[in-house]
Amino acid sequence: MPTLRQLEYLVTIVDEGSFTRAAERLHITQPGLSHQFQALEREIGGPLLERLPRTVRPTPAGRAMLPHARAALAEAQRATTAARRAAGLATGELHLATLYSISHGLLPAALGSWRRRHPGVRVRLFEHRRTEDLAAAMSAGQADIAVGPPPPGWEGQVRHLGTEEFLVVSHADDPAGACADAPRVRLADLAEREWVHYTPDSGLAAILDQACAAAGFRPQVSVRTEQAPAAANYAATGLGPTLVPANTIPPHYTGVVLRPDPPVTRPLTAYTRTTPDPVAAAFLDILADQDLLTPRHIRRRLRAAAGD
Image 1 (cartoon, one colour):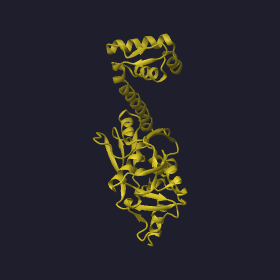
Image 2 (cartoon, rainbow, N blue to C red; image 1 turned 30 degrees about the horizontal axis):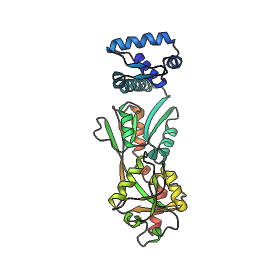
Image 3 (cartoon, one colour; image 1 turned 90 degrees about the vertical axis):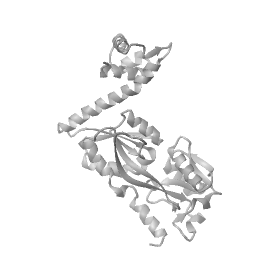
C-alpha cells in the first residue's frame, strides 16, 4: 500500500511539473525522489507519470490517483491538528472553504468573533467562485468546514445556517426607489434597464440570470464584474441596478437598497466530510448565529424606507 510520503511525492511532482523542482521543495535528492517514486509505480502496477522533455504529465492512472492522494494528505494534516487539539494545545489551524461572496459578507463577523475567543488557532481560508467548485474541493479534503449552499447528495454532515437574502441596489436617485411600495421592487419592472452583471465564471451570474428569467426577461448588461462589492459600487454610480447578497452591502452605502418581489434567496449551510472535532464544532456554533445572515444596518435601512 502506498505510504503518505509517496503520495506527497506524487502530488509535489505534479504540482511542480518537474522531478528536480519537486526534490528541491521536498528537501531530498533527485535520485532519492526518483527511486521512491519508481517504488510507488511498482506498487501500483504501472506508470503514474509521463516523462516529457520539459515537464511531466499524469497518465490516466496518475490522474485517477491524484485527487485521492490530495485528500489523504489533507486528512492526515487534519488528524495531526485534531490530535494536538485533543492534547490540550492552544495552537493549530482551522481550514475553512467558502465562496467569495460569503467570504466578503458573512465570514468577517464570524471570524472576528472566532479570533476573540480562540486567539491561538489560526484560520486558513480557501475561496471559490462557484458552489460546485466549493463542493468538489471539500470532497477532495481541502478544509475542515465548507460554508455555502447545500451540496446535492452530500454524504457528510450538513448544518443549516439560515437563508441568505439578495437585494437590488442602484443609484440613490433611481426612480425605482421612489415608487409607492418601496423598499420593494418587481424585477419585471426593471426589464428594460441595463444591469451591472457578473462575469460568467462567477457563481453570482447564474443567480442574477435565474432571478431575471423567473421575472420573464434576460438582463441587458452595462458592465460585468466578478465580485458583489464591486457590482454594488458600480450600481451606486448609475451604471444600472444589480443583485447582491445583503451581507455585502456596507453600512454607509450611498445607493438605494430594495427587496426584490418575489424574494431572491439561497439557503446557507456549513458542511463537513466527517464528524467535526471540538474546534470545528465551536466555529459551527458561531456560524449558527442567525443575526449574521441579515446585517442590522440593512434591516434598519429597509424598515426606514418602508416607513416602519
